Length: 270
Image (cartoon, rainbow, N blue to C red; front, side, top):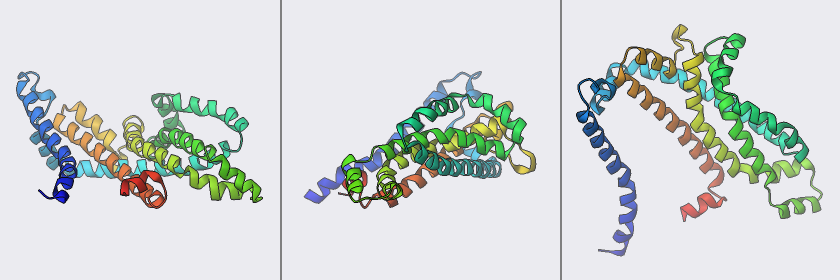
């Protein structure tokens, strides 16, 4: 065997492992289904029953996914923009962070199930409430990570900018913001994972199906009330796919922004 082939085998094996693991999980799924009694059988559909639900409920699933994805995207973008501005504000001084950080914690720790009825009374059920709930879920990790990046800039570089008599805004825009990008994209990846979840939860507790606005959360209510387990599993799979799309988009953006200079990408390329 040539050296190149020997070197390529581990890489090929790593690429095949997820597929092998997936096949094993499907086989195990069938085994568990076969082991259930007749009374318990309806609780866990087989993989082919879930696949059949995808076909039967396809139009409803993809229409709901578009509604959920739209709400998730709006809340996500709003959280990214406002969190970046707020992080710049928090990075001004330790006194500013000490004054406002406890209230960020309070906002993060307030249960969404308590906030949702308030939002319904304020803005009504539907897309607006879903967007706000998604925003609230995504906002905190974005603020925390971006602020940490802005205040973790290399002190030697900060001293160099001071020696060169750079203005505060030059220091922020030309030094602190580029240095904070890895932290920013870490928070962005966390928020991208949470955004579809927040939109589904928001749709579940504050959504509205009027005018075809119902999302995956609303479908969950319908299918669970009708004991359509295959359709429920299909809905969960579509929600998972939505999360993968968000995270993949963030990974692509972080690669475009960081791969030419940051170690996390430059070392991987080598």
